[in-house]
Each structure stands twice: as structure tokens, then as C-alpha cells.
Length: 423
Image (cartoon, rainbow, N blue to C red; front, top):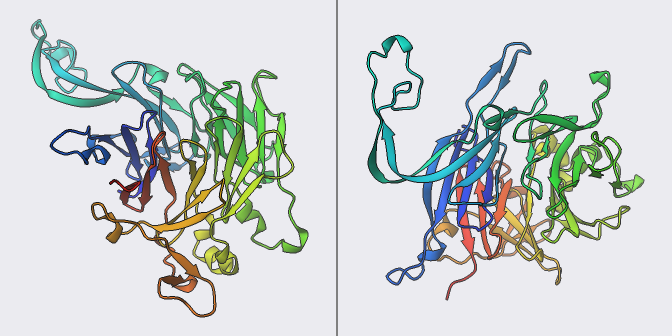
């Protein structure tokens, strides 16, 4: 239940939120640097923990809905409070995170925990009073009705992607053959690729992302390795895309696993909106929005696993969904791999680095050493054989601070934070 399922920095980078399979959200706050502890600026401590989702059961469809948090998205801060979105397979919730130093007590219609009282038990009229409490962070659902919880699923489709628009009101929630667009007061499908007969379903939506500057433009990826860019100004239902991104497949390299490993698990726009990045099972690709026929950059994450696809299929690892992220300048890409390895690719120099998140590297001020995977021949001292990789240790979720070289890496139930070397 404590396995981390999503990681996300807020827009300033001072808050870091994680969600886990138990439906919990943990928020970390960055410590402010002071004279007595000049190096404490890079430390994140627990700020708040709350239960976002509970397990449910759909009796109509005989479907269990687990509480696992699939995505967390922060909204730009407008006042002293912070807002974030969290979603499981079915419901998107909007949470308000604020600090309080006073608490009202003595309500007539509510108990102290906020639950409505039974009118039969109300025997007298009370006047509420404010009592001082220590300054605490209190998360609570923001708004009323559909503002608090938005259903985003029909049937067994799962919400896997979540992103607010450039104007921070509507946001796409990608899952299954449909792409719903929940506003804060309603919900509507903007993409529906579901066939009339579900037995003919051959393609599902795997991820969706709004353009960072143009609130009317969004992209969504599919299990067939394609990306479609849509403009909501053209029609309310964007079944017809404006651009179609797909890399032609080499017929000589096609195999039984081709369609599985080409499925896109994550898509991200660059901060400047010129490029987008996609992650499939073996590689990361960077696309220019003005060129649809092929990516402008391709980075192999763990090409050495191509010869082991059969065993990866048998243990279901081939269906793992890896995420990817940009640094604040869009100059470096980060994504995860197996054996608790994560890869970094510098776009200008084409230099790639493999690092490992482990207990040894979690020591304070420890310096990460690059790792290498040996695919054959004589193995060097600092290399690890591809046959020795632990596929149970995997890094699926990573996040990069919006302005600094500070990263968060989720490895199973551990969260690792790394930053540039501090002098």
C-alpha cells in the first residue's frame, strides 16, 4: 500500500507531493535556508499527509476500484493556499492545502470532526467560538458537489493522465478509449475512439497533455505508438485530429512484441511549447510540433533488454509504464529503468548518464557514481551484467524541480531526492 505511484513538484518547487497505492497523498515542504544551517535549503520535510481516495466497488458492473493514486497535479498558486488535483481509476478530486492558526468550535449542525449531527440530538442553541491552535496544514476538498470530486470513468477504463489547461480550468484526464474533459462544474468527453462493439477495440488512450501556452491545444497518445494533436476550437468533439505523429516502423524488425513495446506510456510538452517528449518501453523520443513524420531526437533507455523481451513478457514487466520529465531549461531529459537505475540525456551534447537510487546513495551529501550495464564480453569492475539486473526494482516515476537541478526519484516505497553538488 505504501508503494509510490506518482511524484510531482509544484510550480515553485517548494512543495513536493507523492501518491501511493494506498490512496494517500504525502506533501513535503522545502526547508528555508538559515544562518545556523546554511545547507538546509535542499532538505524536504513532511508537510502534510491525508487520505485522498478510498477503495470502492461498482455493484452495477461488479468492478473493484482501487484507491491507488495514478496522478497528482498542482495548480498555480493564486493566494496563500495551494490547490492540487489527484485521481485514481475513477474519480478526480480537487484539494485545497492551507494553514490555519484558529479553529471554530461549537457548531449547531456539525460535530467537531465536521460530520452533520442528527437533528434529534440537537437540544440547545450554541454560539461558535474560535480557539487558537498551533499553525497546521489542513487539506480539505475544495468547493461543493462536482467541484470536490469529478467522476471520470465509464466501465473499466482507467484515469492514467491528468493535466490542467493553460488557463487552469479544464483539464484532460486520459484513460481507455475516451478522453473526458472535466471542468470544475461539469464533465464532457472531448475524444471518443470507442467502437460501437467493444470487442472490436484495438486501441486505447494512454496519456494526454495540454499545451503549456495554448489552452485550446492538447495531445493524446495511444497504445499503438501514435500521438494526435487536437485543437478544441475546431469542434467540441475532437475525434478528428489536427496533426498525427507516428514514426514509420521497419518491417524487418517487426516481431510479436512490436506493438507492446511501441505503446506510449507518457507524453510531455517542453516548457517552451515547441517540442513534446514521448516514452515507450525501450526509448524516449522528442518530437518537433512542426514535423509529424518522425522524431527529431531518439534516446535508447535500455536497448540491451530487446533480447530479453520474451522473459519480460512472461513476468509482465513488458507492460510497465515508465514516465519521463524535462529539466527547467528543456535541455536535459530524465526517465527510469530497472535495477533502480534512472537515465539522463543531455540534448545539446548527446551525453547520457546512468545513475542508481539505492540505500548507499541516500546518505547525506553522497555523490552518485555513473553506472554501466555490460551486455556481453568481459565485464569491467564497475559494470553490472544485464543478466544480474533486478526487474523487481524499477523507477517508474520521476520529477524535476522547475528551476533548479533538483530531482525526485520514486523507487518502490522509497523516495530519493538528489541535487547538484553543493560546495
